[in-house]
Image 1 (cartoon, rainbow, N blue to C red):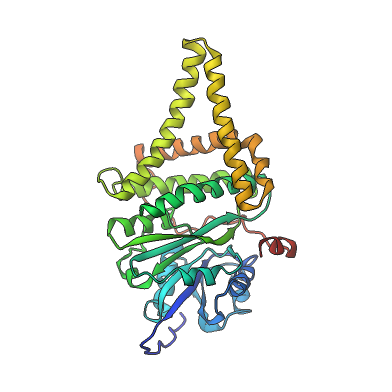
Image 2 (cartoon, rainbow, N blue to C red):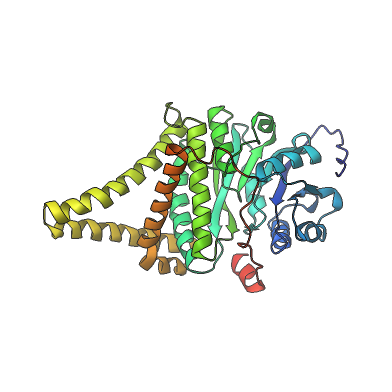
Length: 371
């Protein structure tokens, strides 16, 4: 076990540290660190916690960072590895804010300059940037569409009303004086969601949305990996809903998540009530045609605006298969609901990262496209 570096007594803490937790990230960790440096983060304020990787994650991190900034721990899972790193590096005592980012992140231009300029208000307990997909295959086009309009519209609204429901893994920043109030032994498939609910339930402060700070993340490259990742997210979502008793109180976060569930319910009613009603009861396909065409027109408008906002015309490529993918995600959502809420499965989670096989090395053209 590495010894904890000495913490110098200082009256003034530094503003922002970056912590990169990872497991088997040798293909991307150097790229992530270099992008953080290019985006305005100082070398000595970047830390890596390697969760018992079986590859050369630690060695690649040490090519750029001093040994005192890299920690290897026994297999812990993301949340607990983060807590161990916070304690080991003394980040609570030395910094005002701690940014935690996934090790497959590539930070956009001026990311940390933007972030630091927005972290003045004491009233904010946490902050989130803007998650964007790296350019890739058809799955990335679909994800980029959802990320773009979802954050530009819904996350902005959530930020205004202090209803942000999840701190995404690549873009999350905590005020360090609230860390002592967070339980990192979440036993959840989605630690980020659980920690978000803790901030709301414990009244630790507002969560700020910083849309100009953009972080690019890797998406699954196969449909199988997409389904596995989506299933983990949905199971973790229902774990959090059950653990934190979402819906039993009238807090803002209950309203926010309740609205998300209400949207899904409306979509289910559209699929399994309205469409069969017009087809088999009213025998009036004209009403059904109006309903479907109207929905498709709204989708096309959202996709066009998203493509312009993200400066990615490739987002429009997702339109032909958007509805099949949406139905697939709906099926995964319903399956997760049955597993976690009805059958009470996944009460405990394993200490895994579930990123095996999803990482890939970026070429220079891909990096130029981002930065």
